[in-house]
Image (tube, rainbow, N blue to C red; front, side, top):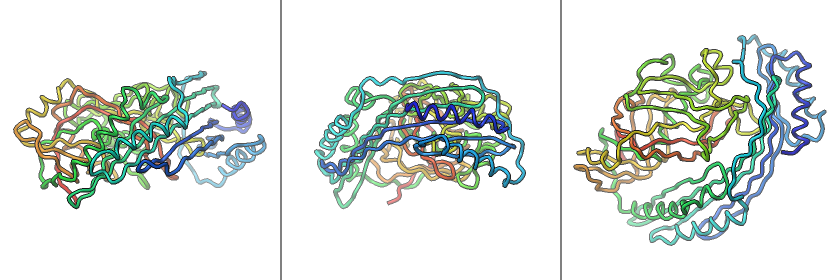
Length: 471
């Protein structure tokens, strides 16, 4: 962390404390990012960038104000922005009383482990190798590989005395294999990576195996069949489950959505007011856990300085809790969960998932399939479409396979899975022992829109939903 930037954050807190505020926090952040896009064994572009600045959140007269300054050169710049923010509270109408759940004063410096420091040269080499693997498969007409890494430093300080520095690196590769044959074009994509260095993508040659798998499956899909619409037994693999968990379990668990504070642009939650009620089968257990190491949702303190912990959201089908900020925690009369995060210093923090997952069960996946007389195995996330309250949902998968008499048979393409949240949750009758966390790199929320990275996951699960193909 730039020492001058950190000093500015400390001075800003001292200045705010003289202005009869209720509360203030400051995030000083800097990052370095390098990425490369490779298509069909050619480097399309290399991008490098650095960014640093300060974001200041002020609560005064029960009104939140926020300002940010990119690469400040003097404290006068910061002071002017803060003065304007405080002055503008006079033009705000009456507001409800805002109080924050008490929080421990935390002082900590955390350096997240990086076993092999990423360099641009490294990610180009890995990208070229993955591109070669994908394009070497018959029927592949386009291979696209986008490796990147970001080195982050974040310093948090607030008017209550917390001082927290967190330094971390994220390494990610996104890949797409596009095939053509029999007059049909298909594509399969995957994202690999996590919080850490190059080891996050090359351990056990994970990234190279993924490149081969997506290329092979994309090629096979040119001979796949569409599916006829029907309601049936559906087995979902962990990658598909991670998006389903994200959309219909994670987002409606965010306390601000439950309170209706995001209805205008992002929706609410169908289970508002249902804490303590049964919302799914006894097989359904859901949690959010920022302490899962190496996931993209791993962090020790959120952007309010709250120390993170695992939060049980659903237990044996009973809705237990939501994700809470210090403000919403006070409303619900529960402890904050450590889920307030902003994309960077330019934005106010919002309640965001860290690593929301369905808990693993004890089912062997092969046994789960053998029990199905007629049904479908759906694999890998694609595109979601969910209503405002996360009640009605449909999510497309990258491919599916028919199950007949306990055996996997036909490969199916262009498949969408549809259901309603309460009916589907109630139908879950098996959870596998193959729990997996997947990286999510583009979750949007807020106005202005913030894109966030996180983890989501779960095991293979079995339930009832409707499938159909859309060409």
